[in-house]
Image 1 (cartoon, rainbow, N blue to C red):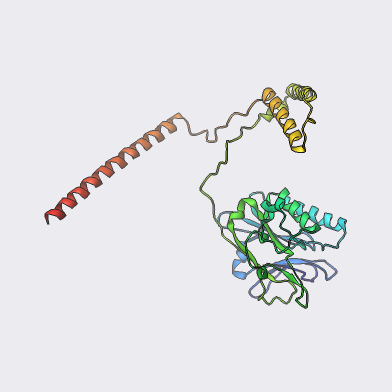
Image 2 (tube, one colour):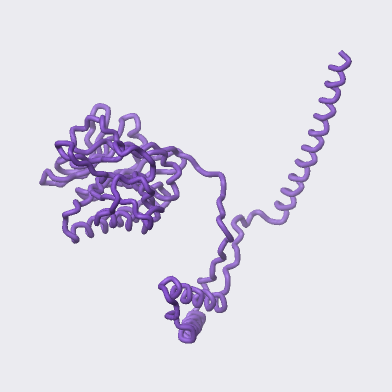
Length: 335
């Protein structure tokens, strides 16, 4: 469980009877602070804890198929200064980049961000937010998620409006959805549901937000469209080739300027096609590499013979089963 606004001092681990607490707090002042509460029977799965600041901390957990890096955050409020918001997202980006690249990365906490239902942001935020319009903190969160190929899962799942708010005023007259969960797009299919639970007694003006996930690996290799061949960019390490490539590209761009399109997209297509054409002429396409050098012609021939023998055995086994079924049917008819 990720918690915010602990208001403790210092940082580290606090051993409780059933739930050790990992926290990142200020060394002198009781303000902000974030942390994690872990059930004691799962403590052996905690691989690392990093106290980044009073607004950010990260917990690394061992999983069944891959490990998880969960980043707990408490973003600045909407009325905070631009500098404070920029510093927060710069530090969050640094924390994300320093996380192991093969981990499933999840960002959860109080984002203080309202997400709307704008059509242009649907691939990142879905269409089931509580709000109609996105505020400044929401734009910053969407920009961060898009830059890192992530999805904001808290606004993807369809729920009744009473299950969407995450914060309320003391008199319960106004509610907001400002606590969110962001996950790598690659692992979005592992996320089953995210919603708030108003009945949780957490002694806070925030509702308890719970996410359900599953751990799985895909055994299907999805290839959408034609596979794109890579250019042999290693040729640019040769100084003569690099100079020739730069000269050809400069001449080609002068002959066909990239300012003839009516829209930015058309101008970009002109530039892209010119660069791709020159790159293919000078550098060429990269040859496909053989992943397993030990798999030589003898291995390939043995594998082919084994597969052929297996097909023959299947055919014979099928024929023998037909004979047995025919004999059994004849015996039943005679009986």
